[in-house]
Amino acid sequence: GKGGAMIKVGHGGTLDPIAQGVLVIGIGSGCRVLQSFLEGNKTYRADALMGSSTDTMDSEGKEMETKPFEHVTDESFEEAIASFRGETEQTPPMYSACKKDGTPMYKLARQGKTVQREARKVTLYELKRIDAEKKKLPQFRIELECSKGLYVRVLVNDIGIKCGTLAHMTELTRAKQGKFGLEHCLPAEHITDATAIARHIVWTRNTLEGIPVPSTGALCNLNVQGGEGGAAAGGGGGNAHGGDKETNGPPKKPISEYKVGDEVEGTVQGVTRFGAFVDVGAERDALLHESQMGSRPPRLEAGTKVKVVIISIDERHGKIGLTLPGARKEQQEKEEEEKAVKERTICFSKLPSGLDDEKIKAKMEELFGSVETVQRGGRLPQDVAYVRFTSKEAADKSLASPPSFPGDDDGKAPVLAECKRLPEQLRSRAMQLLLVLDISGKDLDRNAIRNACEKFGSVKFVEFDGRNGKTYINFVRGSGARAAKEQKHLSVDGEELPIIATTEDHLTSFENLRRSAMQRSSSRKRRGGGGGFRGGRGRGGGRHKRRREGGKNWNSSR
Image 1 (tube, rainbow, N blue to C red):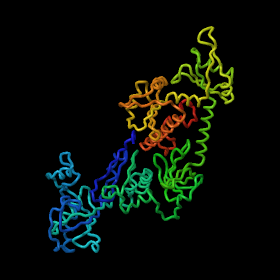
Image 2: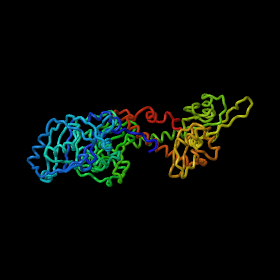
Image 3: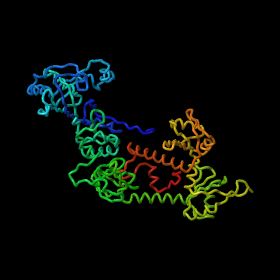
Image 4: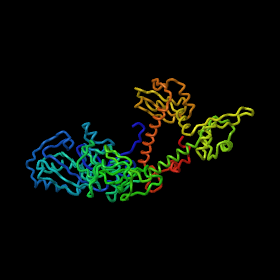
């Protein structure tokens, strides 16, 4: 989507268009260590047909030549394939991803060009014919284990020539690449399911021994078919963590049998940077997100027994959300405490100049009661002060009887301060900073709108509300918003967009859009390696730390 973070993805070895099977995928910084996951040999199963050759050496290509094959017997075929075992030299085909002077050779082949290719050494550790009773000559099926760099299409072509005829490949399956086999694969139909991918990554790390774990990023092995994203049969690993679980234990319960609020015991199946997957006896593992672990997240690892509470159930997508007992209560208590702090914080405006914090505090304590803090300056206007009382009663008293202060000059009448509770002041201020445009039926660029508004003042956020045909512009300072609101229209790329009076509903819609954008951003940061919880140090840096301290930086919510 617009403004979405780009995630680097790499793969460990190209598959032919007609091929299916194992493809190792590196995600994020996992791409940097991808080669260490690919050490080892490859195993293939290939079907072929004797009697004809094609320009691509497989059934996707154009037939080039035919030749009799009736003289080939099972015995002569076995003798032929035996000669290929061991180390040999092979010339890459023109239709391949190998490059010549920086250009992939398949592009040159499509232009009708043929270039000189150098033969290279490859090793066939094992080569045998399988399923001979099903695949009778001129058809045959072979299984082979080889080093990297070997082209099975070329091998099939060479086997045909060795037998005194021609042959081309009709099907190909990569059954194994290094440590990864079909049983470890995630079906490609789950490639758009982030939860299934994350579960599968964790499952792979916990299942395979000797798999290096990158400091950030991840690797995932997919079971792809025909290069078109279809799911091939045999992705056992994908079924274990992308669909129904296959275990030898008690039968798994359907998600519909669980209820929100149930407290259950589960076993951690794997840990990622954004949470843990827990087996609670359901058909699929449930997610314990890091945000649901409280201010002091526990140290979790695969195999840990943990008591959890179900907080959400999505039967359509087969997902269960979890929290730790007490974490939700802790969050509610924290929110109530922050609310109480705001309720006893009063915004005093229209204060005369010459007042310092001590004078304001002394005046408030004389009239209303004890004061915790007085905040002025910074991003606050010069005539505004935030006063936090130690009790709500004192705050209520100040609202009922706003204080007066001496005028700026001697003999000038006292100035009566305006009072608002902090939440009301923050909302009123937010409405002053918000400009609303009607963009119904228009397709405009976010940057174009931002640039058009920058002539009035600095812009902090621009959010589109496509459902209601509105665009919300959040200015940094009130002067910029006021200057823009004095206009009836805003000119953007030749379009005259009406400026609408800001209402409470507009502000609510804008806040919802910003909340969604922040959640997406936070999720991307966690996936990209933002502070993990496994070391028991919480969820990251100072911003989260300040939030956990119960609102000490109470003005940060402004």
